[in-house]
Image 1: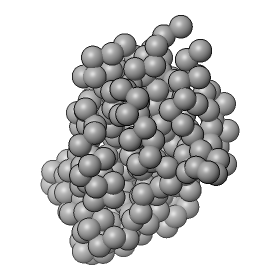
Image 2: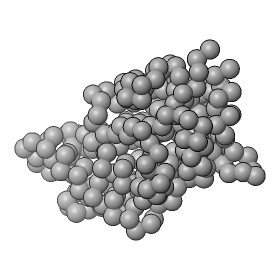
Image 3: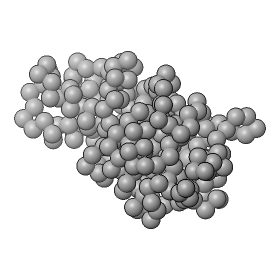
Length: 239
């Protein structure tokens, strides 16, 4: 059996419930600023989450034959929208509207104290990911990560396992020596595609999904003395 040497975290839905009240709201504010008659309600955004990456979700609108604005360079326009959306999202983080999920900071600290390598692997914009981690978890926890991978660091986004293979390479460990904390089917498939163990902590948008391939599924990472996921619980998955 492989030895447990590294723990890798997704961000959106894992570190915080960022989707419905963070990213979605920021996208809608951009649409409003641009004078676009597009608003993603919670149900529509839930469908869009099956597509990994913010720019990729924007493409479903900008490349639609019904898109209400004439755009000469669609890819440049998408980049412009996404940059502005990230600015708005970071303003929201700074305002304190988003809170870390229970147990995340504790598990990161436990992993570090146990001598494990630590990484973040997210399909979200790197600037937003780093800002979220620093603001919600604080510099002490943020600085425990050995590697932070985000945004367009890989060509193929989740459910492709590319970002997890890259994380293992950057951490200096084998993929089978890693465990991942995820919250979506795309993330789970990416982790398992890389040959890694995967703990799923259900989020608002994924609470009803089965996650049959996961090694462990919980509603929350939790905090003692209540139910919680410990490093030893994850280590047991390797035995």
